[in-house]
Image 1 (cartoon, helix red, strand yellow):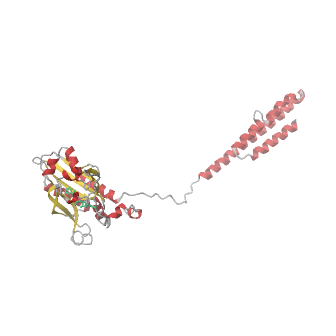
Image 2 (cartoon, rainbow, N blue to C red; image 1 turned 90 degrees about the horizontal axis):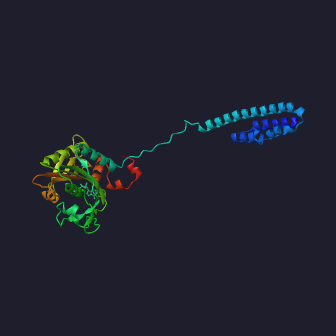
Length: 339
Ligand code: FA5
């Protein structure tokens, strides 16, 4: 019995010394010291020994159990250390490795130009309104005083959904919607997409963006329009920018003008950008026609208004030196990442 005990003890201690992880350790504990473990069984069988041998055997058994338990504690500490070392090795950060590059996107040049335009006008007290891209012939032409035979109404110029509904050709129908829904004073800008049946080329796209401005109040004058546009142009293109009004015709404004700015590349001297003239066309503008005010339920005897409309694509092109409008819509990252 004594021999058996000693042998089992040695076997257990040797196995514990070899154990490599917590799971193996637990298996060994169950194998030797568990309720049905080999050592436990052996101790239990001591009852069958002759009485006089029991005390000595009890002593030996306790000794062996203590040795196995202390070997178990040792093994537990050793495995704990091993696991900690493995974890540290695994979690080590190699600070000499190259970092992950973080590619930061930028806003599309059109969005950048629009943000800038909005900021200038919001700073001047305008609020931003939007209208639908699919609108009625009434809002896009009739209410805006466009004669029935105006060439822009032709199918060759305008995309018709049906006889009465079109893709808006300008942001001006938002003027109509705003005047119908709001009592003066009105001071709004409305940016958005417009559509024309134009053949794509370097300066034309069938889909493009405009920004419309509208002010209606008692005593609004052409002087206010000029002053406001001058401030706007200087914000956008620099302190020394000048503007010039050229007489023009729009059905919805009277008088109407096309507004040019001094070329921001050459400052007015003449260069390739302004084709030698020193001026660059910026937008269309004018005093809101009394018929338009009347159509929208505003008394032109009491109120007057002014409006302007510009192509955001062309402004972005001028501002960023882009020579083909189609680049704005091709979504080529090699182009877009330059802005
Ligand atoms: C108008 O559309 C007027 N509604 C502007 C206006 C508003 C005048 C309020 C007076 C008062 P126009 O047809 O000129 O005007 O167009 C305005 C701008 O839209 C042009 O100067 C140009 O920058 C832009 N544009 C017009 N067609 C295209 C196109 N196919 N591609 C890119 N930009 C275009």
